[in-house]
Length: 118
Image (cartoon, rainbow, N blue to C red; front, side, top):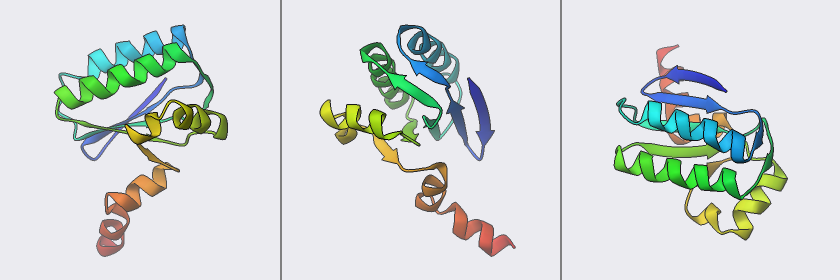
């Protein structure tokens, strides 16, 4: 799993399957990140090919941990099959979901900041 620290955020980039094994790895990441003071955890799911109920449980758990840590958990890059799972389970109403990481940058106002610096 890739991990990039940027601004006051961390970007997680899991790959492959978000099933029992992938969900366990994600749970370990949540435990590692919780004590740190990030404003946001961004989970880029563009490299996830499959999500099952175990993966959804780990995502919901991450949302709970983030909320307790006063951190925002944001998802981006969902493939159509994953987006459908979120819609069917109505988790799209619970999570902040963006099309791409660039869309998050725009939403957080960083594109304008970058243009002002240049």
